[in-house]
Length: 274
Ligand SMILES: Cc1cc2nc3c(=O)[nH]c(=O)nc-3n(C[C@H](O)[C@H](O)[C@H](O)COP(=O)(O)OP(=O)(O)OC[C@H]3O[C@@H](n4cnc5c(N)ncnc54)[C@H](O)[C@@H]3O)c2cc1C
Image (cartoon, rainbow, N blue to C red; front, side, top):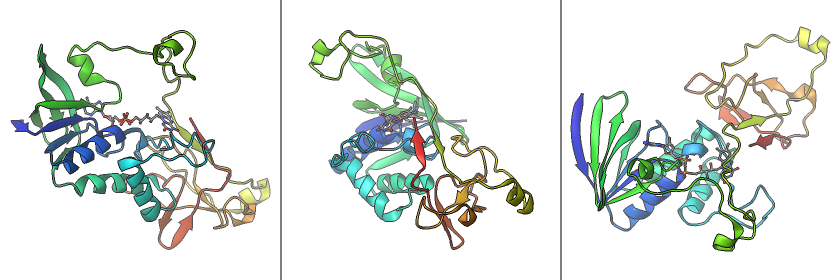
């Protein structure tokens, strides 16, 4: 095991989109940044590991002209250009490249922050264990950003916090409940469903068997992924063929992919569920 201490202007704990945007913003303002995430990929809930859509502003299409702006907007536009089919693994690379484009950011992946050194004057350091390389790294900086998604750093530092929803009167928010409560997000799983058409018993017997892929880490696909005609959801059952594309991790590619000259698309009827 190697113990080391590093110093930056800002330490960002959590490599989700909040952490990525904060780190990129700080770097563009000329600050040196340690971006520390405990997963092997950036993006947090939006990464290929979880695959939550990034569509808060659109309200799933209800707010037709609303979009996330700023650095988040940059990422979305870049991803539309590089990854028009919305492959989750390519989204990972869009986010990673945005971070790597900033020389001021030092990226620490697979590094789980568990220790926080905090006193009356605030946090002086946090310490994380980099899995796989056996490095115990202490991050020092005058400023720490808790982007863990769960407020872990604040909790470990002894900060006061609340859980649940505030009452409407507190901030005058029209959609808030009348009274405060302790309700939090009800689901922690996200899965996609895909209308893969139907096959008659006869054609099922006649067609060669395909082995189902192992469950993907996100549980996104529990049966062989099929490809649709490029026209999207209007394809007939006969045009569906098993997709043999596999990812580096050996799992099915998920909702869409391009490989070996084969293009698969998510049918228009695919339904994100959350
Ligand atoms: C099932 C589900 C569905 C959702 N659907 C939508 C949706 O449709 N549209 C929408 O806009 N929002 C949706 N959300 C909410 C959205 O995912 C979150 O608001 C958003 O991900 C928050 O981003 P974040 O960067 O703050 O946190 P996260 O995405 O949670 O990222 C936090 C990162 O910090 C890392 N981390 C945590 N602890 C540590 C530690 N100790 N050390 C190092 N790293 C750490 C985590 O591994 C993670 O990578 C959904 C959330 C869930 C759970």
